[in-house]
Length: 178
Picture 1: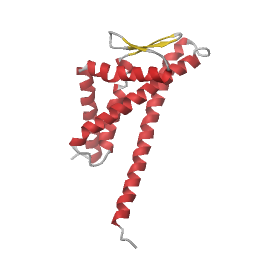
Picture 2 (picture 1 turned 60 degrees about the vertical axis):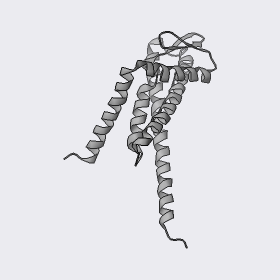
Picture 3 (picture 1 turned 180 degrees about the horizontal axis):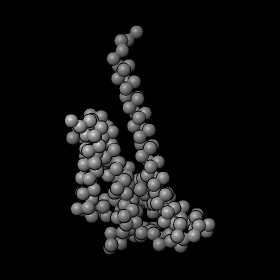
């Protein structure tokens, strides 16, 4: 007999694997659903033009940098993590609400990824004069990790606060009026 925690971990792993499998089987989903909107939003945040290329990338016109948003930096992995977290974090989630949860996860993932792209570009611009080029990839990875983890922590805090508020509401509605 498996513990509830083991079952939860196995279900979460399966959910993540299914989302990753969908992304692998439908690369156009990643290109059109994540690369394009994330790249365009990042360009808007930076105040720079964006160009959709035939290779499924978004090229950003940044002075001194050759920036291409590709499937590797689409934010799809973050979407998979986010959707999996929300599916297992929200109590009493019915199957009918899963599409709305996925849509909300997509919107949040694209927005956070655009912030990550813009932040990585700004960090690169600021660090180029002081750091050798071979450190830039590490800095890029660290910046992206910091942005994504910050978003997940902020979401966890918001969900925890909302859960407390909901618990208080339920408690006060069951107490007799004075």
